[in-house]
Amino acid sequence: MNTATHWNILLSNQINKKEFINTILSGHAIGELAPFNKLKGILYSDLAIDHFIQKEFQYIELTAIDSNRKLSTFSSGQRKKKFLQYCIAQKPDYIIFDNPMDHLDQASRAELALALEEMASHIKIIQIINRISDVLPFITNNRQINSDAFILENISQEIHETKIISQSGIPHAVHPPEYKEKILVQMNNVSVSYEGRPVVKNINWTIEQGEFWQLIGPNGSGKSTLLSLINGDSPKGYGQDLYLFGRKKGSGESVWEIKKNIGYFATNMTSLFTRNHTLEQMILSGFFDSIGLYDLPTTLQKNIADQWLDLIGMKHLKNKMFKRLSVGQQRLAMIVRSVLKHPPLVILDEPVEGLDDESVALVCQLINLLKQESNMTIVYVSHRAEPTLAPNAIFELLPSEEGSIGIIK
Image (cartoon, rainbow, N blue to C red; front, top):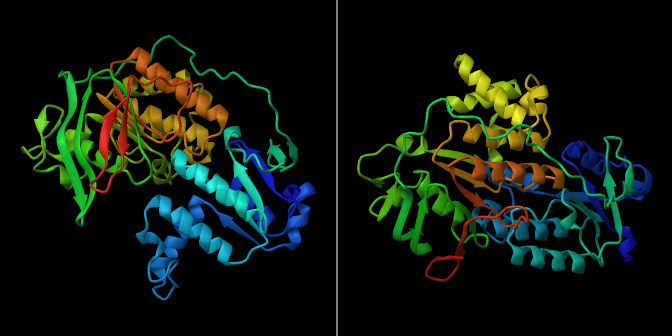
């Protein structure tokens, strides 16, 4: 089949992607995509995988995706592979791939790109992406959409310089951070296994104040395991030579005593804010560690929230409903919420996944500003190497049959 039947379509986070995808799948595409209206299509996306897993729990009689195993029993990387096999087995004329490279390590991205190129000989491909670097090179039809009219246009090569810094320095904390020790986290020969399966082995990692770390490793190498040890969520930390904010794990501390020292952001956190809270209210809720604002903020807290919104160029949106903001705006605001109190440690778990290039630039500028203007320690988790970010050091997990080992680069 001629590669001219395949498409790379670049969208910004401002576009109603869900509606655009439904337009194609429902047979109401316009313009150059109109030939798909008479064809059978299926959606491949992280959301589609989540919906499939939900159905597995709802309907016991649902056929297992692989022999006798349900999709929910596989690792995240394996889920993507198995769900792609499932999509192909439905014998569609075309598959819409929504940011298929997100959350994949470099080797898995290369493997998926090769699989898509081989698949393109008998199934049409529409790849929807937010970053121009994810364009599949074997596809010759490359377009972008700039409005919810869903008109396909040629991809612009013009680079827009985006700036968010509108004042010198980041806003001060209401109360100065209480933690004064140099070392925040210390792991000495820490090993973790689940149901007899080794995950990490003999991890030695010391995180000190003011450092900027990037945590990397292939899918399934144990990055989430290390994060759960640091934030106190994992019971696997008991009995280990693990120190969190000056106290040995299991010495009588509560999980809340650990978490008060951590500002945490993960991409799935935006889905927690479902009520009609404004952007300002969502930012202010960071002072109270609540999902939404249920306490009366002080005048000082409101002033500080205004300063942060001014810093990221979103003060004019303070009264807009948070859930109506673009994905990029939500992500930027959630990072601000996590650092509002100047916690000693900030964990940013894949903060740029799913963002367009402009939004990635904004987030990277904010991270750099935090590094330059504060003593907050940053642990940044991502498979992508962003050229504008410069961590002090990289902690890399290398998988083995005995569990991943960690090396410092």
